[in-house]
Length: 81
Ligand code: SF4
Image (cartoon, rainbow, N blue to C red; front, side):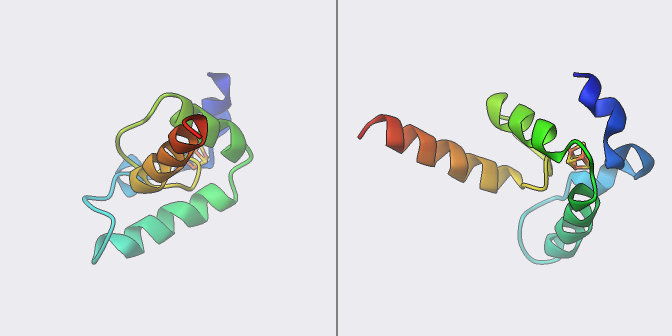
């Protein structure tokens, strides 16, 4: 878990990464959070952690919760083929 110590988000307001939704006015906030993630040296570790642990909320590794759920659904469907 020490990858967290190197996250670019440590210098940001944590609220930025927890938009109220994934549409409308939240889209701008999500894009601002993604911009931080894009310059983050531990993006792969963060994204893998969030996917592995089914993080329910927030932007992790540049992905929203909805995007992570879609990835998880895709993996689940692949397992059942
Ligand atoms: S990828 Fe984004 S949410 Fe994850 S540690 Fe980096 S800045 Fe924070």
